[in-house]
Amino acid sequence: MEGYGPQLPQVPQIPQFPQIPQSEQQQQQAQQGGYAWMPGATTVGVVFDGGVILASEKRVTYGYFVMSKGGKKVFKVTDRIGVACAGLIGDMQILAKEMEVQANLFSMDVGRKISVRSASKLMANVLFNRRYAPLITQTIVGGLDEDGPSLFVLDVLGSLIPDKYAVVGTGTEIAIGVIEEGYKETLTAEEAKDLVTRSIKSAISRDSMSGDGIDYLIITKEGIAEESIKF
Image (cartoon, rainbow, N blue to C red; front, side):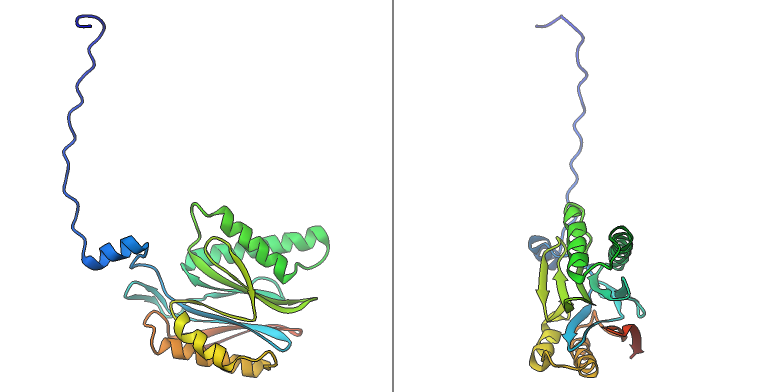
């Protein structure tokens, strides 16, 4: 009804600006859900007779830019459990630190060391709880407990898959072929290390996002040994 009550002000129309044109490659990446800045890696885990070995190369990339040649993607969690990751370095560090703290709290509360399966399930819960703001990392958890050596693979949303060997990262397609060709459950520690080294070197030779050296975490009854080589 005209003439009654205050008149609402007219909101001016906001001008519409044309969107920045995207290249065909960017449009394809957006449709597929991929992003050019996602970092690469080649990270491997193998169960051998008496232990587990985790390893990853050292290169940190964003797109085609090599940001660092000394990145660390393998972390000690307890004196019998370790994690190896591929993805964003910051997310790896946060996840490994969270797992280390929770494993220590478990040991103090229960009075015994946490098992590899329980530690992996704990990490899976952390990842799933962050599903709406995910930690961008693929993770391999390996270790030794009363049930013997074991290995678990986790994706961004916390899917938990047990296995005897695993590879994650951009070099997976190349490295997994070498692992599958040479893997046996009766491998010794030295044989497993040689197999892991060959798989990562084969991936480095073809994957530009991987390179510059290898970090190892070797878990046996004697404890954890950390080793590193540079290329």
